[in-house]
Image (cartoon, rainbow, N blue to C red):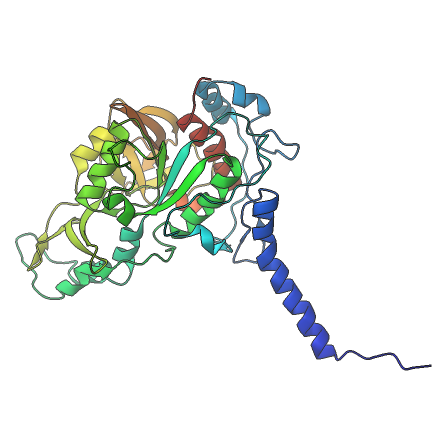
Length: 402
């Protein structure tokens, strides 16, 4: 009798570990293409989080039922308001195992979609959506602007600063930034392809918007919906393009608070941004001095409908277990409030009167703005928030009467 072949233990361990790593990285992508499941997100704590299931499926655990698709947006809003469902929030923002081909495609081609889209029907079919990565904000955060801000924090108005001005310019990077919605936007991208497999989705950057990529050659809107994250720093041209997009009939969804706070200029030859005005400073290339906090405060209130606030101490109506961070408060009487979070101002501030922080809609010319009012990056992996976004915001934004 021949002796059985003995496999070295170390080789067996190597084989097992290698197989596990291969499966871990391969399955999310395979499933996202074959079955329509979005990329898996693994939390830092080691626990996994699977984004909410689709509407109209047997596995649906949404607070919305299948009949919601046949109802008006107002009934969808009512159902969400009446829900008291809460879900736990993972302890830390997830590390994303995302298909690298999703990110910053040079030709902005459509992402692969699953073959079985029967559960969606005609609702929202073919809608053109652009997710805009806040790359200018990421550049400002990247050991640059804030080094300057902190160094000269005690400077008063009327004093010109002529040193360390190099800190007010920085290279733009297309790497996803944790602090500037990069990770959250990647998560959202996978989620959009899951709930809108028939949609035409593009992934843009601030540079693209600055260069007019949200418009077609003849000037009409190239997309039906654009989704912004933490666009704190934008160029004047980018700001104007967003405004024109909405005015021409587009829908702009704003995920985060503290948007359009400061103006930068972009040099596409050097791929750098430089501060112009906002965030309490102005810079002309030769010196910097104290200036306004929010660059377009009045104009933003007029067409976006809200402005930045960071003085909230708590929310009495808090379905997503959200903690105050950076929010937008209602500043336009024409805002249509969809979900009021019943904010309380911190007593340590000098603000007086009531402040309303809410998810709202504002109709502007031919289009509309829908803003979450919160810093949604913080709750992007909260199941209740995901369902609110999927079942209310997107459906409300692309609603059409067939």
